[in-house]
Image (tube, rainbow, N blue to C red; front, side, top):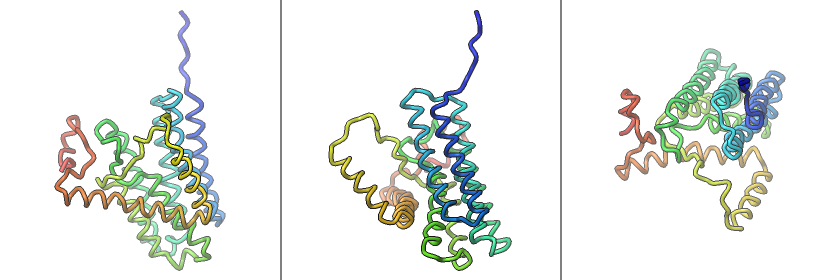
Length: 255
């Protein structure tokens, strides 16, 4: 019998490639001093990245190739791109401190993605272990977008950018739980009011996208610490690791 040739599923990988293009576009725009468009590129990549996995699950086209492609795309769009944009916009004015902050963010992005890949089977699906890289990228890019729209130069807020980059980067590699929204079922019917609320949300975002989007991700970027502190205060287990029998060195994460 003739052996069937192996291939890849085109639909989910098209979304992944489009997200990768968003990150690449953001870097190119930053090189041309169009930091507002660079930030928009990162946000577009974030939207497309949120769709590829859902499309794969809904069409039953998940694959190991798609998972690896998604991780590589995320590293470019949410790891390297925000670090380079932040450096070009403000951090290079700080000398060695600037590139150190940019590198810390980029390195933490890589570590976050690597840990996510190996901990997929042991983490509570309702939560992310640490700030997800798209949300971290949204904090960095959102701050740049907001300042650019306000006419504030990067040199004027370079130390603020320094701390934003460090906060976003280091929060990615913490054990703080951030709600993943993965238990939201797209196939199930919802009350009519939910659609009305979604429409209102879109309308609010369109009032002033830089302000609204940055505010939303600031709230999300702080929400994990609120959940962590609440669990600690209640004496509950704060880690999102559920079981870790194959990785004994991670036993301390259950505390």
